[in-house]
View 1 (tube, rainbow, N blue to C red):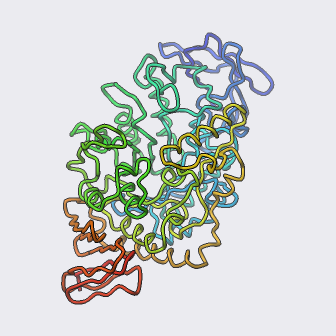
View 2: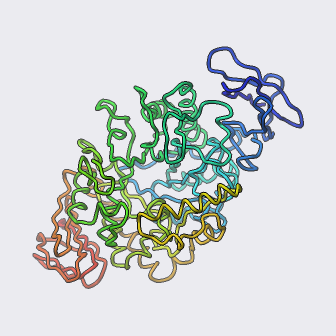
Length: 577
């Protein structure tokens, strides 16, 4: 039997419906307004629901399984019901890492935890070291990105059972793959969020793009913070995740002396079971404090997603200048981000109409995650176009080369390695008509800043939008996908074998470029990377002796003292014998 405890300071009466009966919970002593069930115990796999002052039924705020969705009863699930086989597993250091972001629902045709296992050998053979799962916490309906979770301790039931998720992680570990989980602590979803019925999880003192902010610094916030910290430790300890990606931490408004992210880092570090864990943040403000050490006034997180690198790279490869890409587009910016971590580290941003960022002084490139694609940069386009729909093969190879030879920890988005033809669109499955309509209409309005036609935006609520986003694994065997996959594999193998490419010291990155001719050369120790984005062939001085390690086209010429590159090509060489 499992105990039931519920934090519910808003309740004057709290009951549980269990096996056709209603039982009262009793308030515990102390000032934290916790309630517990004393009359009976809850057995493994029992369904139960809560009533607050006669209103309900509601799921348990800490429900570990919602087999009938966000509005259904909770089901008791134990951490002890799975036999792990990963006791000797230790992940590769992040400096040697390659992250692969995937969405369970679209990664395979079946879209389940069990089906994902069938594709793990592909990831291991590719050279992936860390698999990052987009959010899994129970959200509304059968399909969605996962950023609208409301039952944060329960894996989404359409993906499979808790035991099937544990099996996926266990199988990853058997193949040497660490597993990261994307978690959302900056807001709750709009459908099925019953938490405010129990306690002050939200506050109207601040507002966010999703409405009221999470209450992490006001009255009652101690237990709200405990909720998030317990959730993080729960996924890491009970599910054996090797780290967390923390969504949009800039939207967590916390004026406390101890920021929630610093508290979270401390508690994760003190789990005490000998397993190393990673905490990687998304921060839209180019604020390096999250990844600075506490001794320097930071929060001590391990790494941060680097959107400046993406925007600088994407804009020079595609020529896009709409929306936030209007702040980017020059080779000088690409050169700066490779050497300084950010493009905007205290400069005025025309798109934002304000100063953006602060310098990343004293930080390593290994504190940043670099990418050409991710779920946001693909899925937040009107048509969900991947880079493979936006640029020719030559530029795809250039983008891959610059990501995988940059001083940052590289990350790929599912299907990127073969130039998947399928889009990754925004999709949802809200049952409430007004909410469904608001999501569809709001999505179209968001694209106005990019100049995209709202009428061309696929309806997020349509099942076809979700189905179109599923990967087609049969593409791996056909051209040009097969050729691009070979290129990625060769680049990944080169990075894995090169200490120079794993060196995160941005001060050791040497970059020269010619804005007018469109070429850029990056030197990282013995490894040189030369790119021609111009419209004409270029002949570049090249250190002798050098030998060509990889070239995106056979037309590249290398001599004793020069390198000749045709347009839209990249060459990687070494000056070692």
